[in-house]
Image 1 (tube, one colour):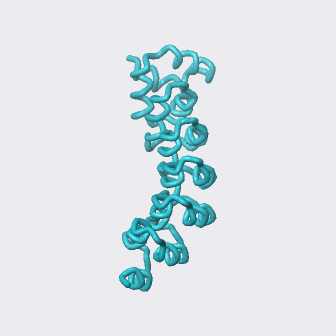
Image 2 (spheres, helix red, strand yellow):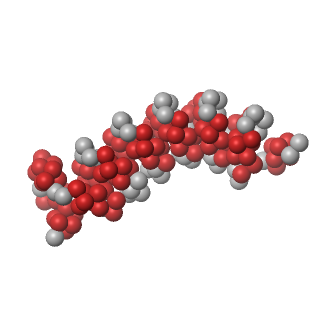
Image 3 (spheres, helix red, strand yellow):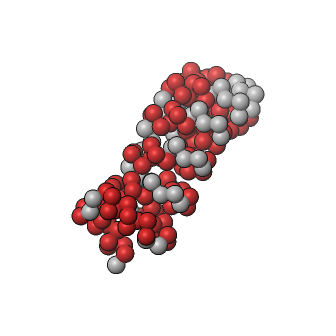
Length: 178
């Protein structure tokens, strides 16, 4: 019954009423909805939760709406921000912000996301952390000029990312073999 109620809430109640009801629902139901729901309004309400596990689960939901991702990208929890950086619906603005995160794992996931813009990828290709540079190297949206530069990186991990990238031109691959 609770699942049906949660699905119907956004369409029959005001935002304030939904928030009030959500506050009293069992945590397990909220986590389940954060994981499985595809209702944008409900997912946005869940993004306002104070419960870390609800937010973490929601950040991994492939149907999480952009409005909720924008809120989650400002979370104080690095694992939530890292999930947002991996998300297919993360906007270029969200990814640009996460590409400047203090936590390298968030930057790495932003670097790996094919929606990350060129300016952010350029900055990330010079990151001090080799895992971040390797994520840029493996990103199929990385411009050829970045791949050429990264192909001579001191880190084998970065060079391996260039080699794994399906869009690396043959001439760069030949240079890698020397």
